[in-house]
Length: 237
Image 1 (cartoon, rainbow, N blue to C red):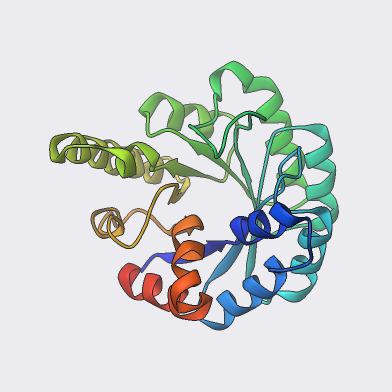
Image 2: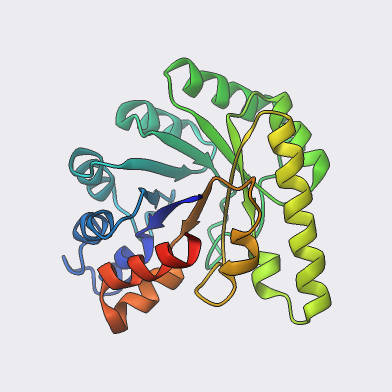
């Protein structure tokens, strides 16, 4: 059965809208964990638009489950990861003008720098996943740079307008999950997954973990974060 890592970034998004102290992503992380989350994901962006350094530090010290730090492949983030020592680093592409991550990492164009970052983090006993589009050649590049695993970008599946488009995207994800597994890479998935579309992706047995944030945080406005997490856990399980 796949595990669930709950991304609490958008709790911080609400807080930063008023530059206030509430709602606190640390509290949200603890409540998600108590409701059954197998891990907590945070994306410390270069522009600090939601999660702040303090949030990351306190979450690291207080949660009992696994911490997945999403970050850009920069020297600043590399040093922070070495200091925080999360259970997992997921390297993601990052653009200042985007509302949310728009696609997978361009591994081929940044092969040397990504390989160096992956090697440095793994030398410090920090596994590294790369957030990528479901493309076979990119899976092979992830294997080439020594990544521990991949997180398959499910955004195109989530945004598909027709059943044919959805089936085609689902097949791409499934085929890449199989390939990654054959190359002994861990397989995670995330982006755009919600309570309505998780079912078909959940049935891809090679996927070991889902990183889900926005839909859980949105649902928690109506039912509370504990129930929102429990509902998603039931759907995954």
